[in-house]
Image (cartoon, rainbow, N blue to C red; front, side, top):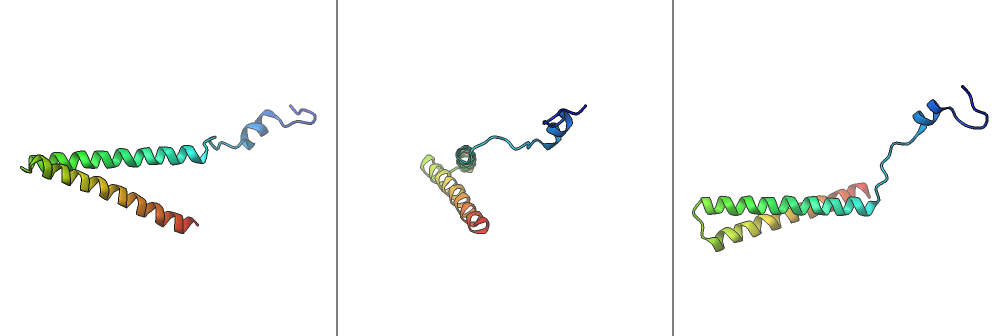
Length: 87
């Protein structure tokens, strides 16, 4: 069934772009949230393991803070490397 001046239903369906309508800001905000959740999870696990190992609360907190900072540092290094490669 051909329509004058317009594409058929099948042509419209198969030609349609299926890219999601997501802005760059949305991707950046979701990525930041994901990195912060991963950093907090790593810090919580490091603090819990330190306490199970017999560390005092200040020492466990220090280990948790170190793990949090390490995850953020790794994320920033990966971001810098990707920015360099993708230009």
